[in-house]
Each structure stands twice: as structure tokens, then as C-alpha cells.
Image 1: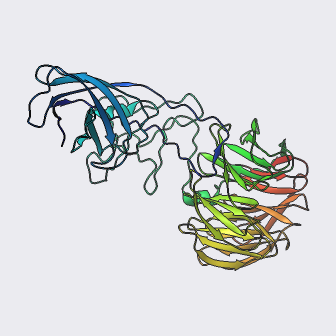
Image 2 (image 1 turned 180 degrees about the horizontal axis):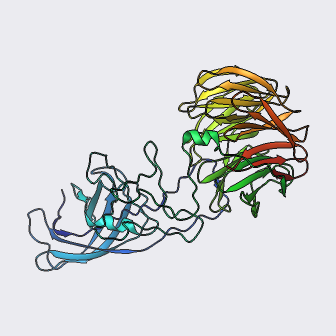
Image 3 (image 1 turned 90 degrees about the vertical axis):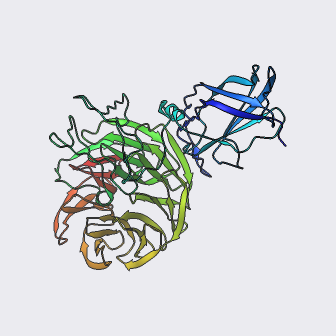
Length: 500
């Protein structure tokens, strides 16, 4: 039986909801950069109580040791924070102590936090005391955050709300670096919602980059194309290419790097190391994912800080990567499967496809994977990876692209592209292009195909496959992409990219 108890007069314990971003450690994931140090600030927290024995008599004028522990459960579990303090009681058993709380506690939600108290060598008192109120002010420290559950029927319908009754701004965000001044995302709803009774729901001063929804991710944007021949140097033996909304990224298979150039004028931003023999790439809105064929990994690069990268193991000889709006899909050529990854790099399943798969694309519902040696395309449901259908195409399919209604496949062994209606997976036709087609992209009106052995690109009308023209580029063209204004082509044999 406990020989002491505490009667609380004031509990000023500020349970610190110090939600500095939790470090998600994924098996096999290795950061190539030293982790940034979380903000560490000690918070003085005052606690006052009255110490009595079991009969209610004060334990007066004594110095005792009290251990305070914080839990996420009302009973059981492991404490997430603990600290001991020597306190001295007065004649009525009253005491006051100040604790030092050092973030981060590493807790996702402190709306249900409990305080445990142990006096001396006695067991911890029961029941634990629930903590609420002012403690959550500590979550506003830079690097921390507020986490909770709020439904649309609640008021206010937000975890964090700002109301301004004056003529100024309700919320202002400013960033000195390359990141966003204000960033919003949502798993199912709106990443940002704006409304106005009299003014403008959204006013923008400066260049505008509209982030993509799932369908636009699959389309890789659509606008008119200017045809002007310009070439820029990249690394050794370039293969893949990707556009992130402002920059063109090229994977250099021969020197294990990626080159980043500004899309508007080709200005070189930098060259960054990745794994061995990088090929395919995908952009998820914040990070570039690079498939390293030579060491069975993908490299995840933070676009705003390319020196910050992580290496993640996948299957054998990963060749292509695509993003479906939620998951990254990595095509493993050597193991005849695809690996599905979350944005953290954590695995979310492995699914079998055909022989020697190469690249993939998403239509907003399904993921389509080209099987080079099976001469087919495997269609997987993106939500759970289940097989939808296997569709025969031409010989040795390589790259695949979505035009908003149809999938287009470049058949490198058949000198053609295959058009497939995505809704019912029906083949609508095969259309001749140049020699050994490898890469393919869509500009909103036309399909563009790289002819690897013909040192050219073919341009087809998307609605009927009519051949519009063929345009010379560099030697050995492979990857191709569209940046909203121009077509970019990777010339693997002369280490350049052409801008059309």
C-alpha cells in the first residue's frame, strides 16, 4: 500500500507536444547527408502539490525525491518522458518544483497524455493524471507541430485556425530559400481551399506553377510546343529525363549522376551523385526518385535541396519509376516485378509482371508496366497492386505514356507505337515511327517518339496516330519529356539533351 499521496492544487505541467518531424527509419534506407539537428530548448514547467500520507496527514517539512513520468496511456505502457526532482514540503505538506522539459518527445498526438508520479521508493501512484490545456502552446516552437483529429462538422473545422477582423492578412508565410512559403497537401480532399465574399479567392503576384492532380501527373502536362533546335551538355551516357515543374533532370548512366538544368533557358543548376547506372526517374511534387539499375536501389533526392538524398533498396536491376499520386512504383527488370514504395521510402508491396519489365506509367487508376521480352503490358490496380489485365503490344516495348484517355507504347523491336484505350484496355492501333523507338511523351496534342537508331524524333497526331513529321536530334536518342512549352530529348551517344 502506498504510504504517501499528492493532493493537487495547481497542475501547471505543460506536456510538451513537441512534434518535431518524427524520423522515419526504414529498413535498408540510408541517408547520404548528416541528419539536421532538431531545435532543442528546455522549457521550465512549474508543478505544485500537497504531499500527505494515506490518512491524509501532511508530510511536513521534509525533503523527498519525486519522479514525474509522461505516458500516452492512462495505465501501462512505457513513459515517453521522465524526470526526478528533490522537493521540500512546508508545514502543511505543500511543495513547488520546476521541471525542465527538453523536446522533442517524439509523440504524434498529445491530446491523450497522462502524468505518473512516484514519491521516493514507493510505487507509482494510481490513477495517473490526465494533462490538457496550456501545454500545447509549446507546439508552436519552430520545427514542432500540432497534430489532432478535427471533422468538417466540428467548429472550427481546422486543427489550427487564424481569424483576422482587421484589414491585414490572416496568415503570412515567407521563405528565404527554395522551399514553399506555404505548403498544403491532402490525402483525399483539397491541398488548399480558398474562398472570398467580395475580393479574390486567390491572388498571385509572380510566376505561377500549378501543381498537378492525379490525372495531370499521368499526363505530364499539356501545352503547345515550339520547335527550336538547341542542345545542352549533360553527363556520360544519359538515359532518362524528367521535368519537375521548373527544372529538367537527366540521369547519366555512365558516371552515376543526375544533371539538373533550368527548363526555361537550360541554365545548369548542378550535377548530383546517385547510385550505379541510373536510368528511369519520377517526380512526386517534392522529391526526385532515380532508379539505379547497377546496384538495385533507388535514390530519393529532395528537389529543394539536392544534396539531401536517401538510398533505398528495391528489386534486381530497377529500370523505371512512376508516381501514381500516392505511391512510387519501381520496375525491377532483373526480378520481373515492381516494388511499390511510400513517400517515406517504406515498402508497400511487390507485384509480379512480365519478362524483363522496363518502364511504367499511371492513368489515375492503374499502373501500366511494359514487359520488354514478353511483348506485353501488365496493368495493375494502383490501390492494391492486383492484376487487371495483360495486354499484347508490339515487339520489345520500352516506354509508355498516358494522353488522358489512351496509353501509348514505344515498341523498340517493331518500329512502331501501340495505342491502347485505358478504360477497357482495348488496342486501338499500331502506328509506324522510326528505327528502334525508345522514349515517348505527350504534349497535349501530339505523341513524340525517340528513334534511337535513327537519331530523330517522330511526331504523331494523338487523336488518330497520323504521322506529322520527323525531326533530327543528337545521336542515340532515348528519353523524352515535355515541360509545358518545349520537348526535351536525351541523346545518349553524344552526351547532350536537345530542346525542340
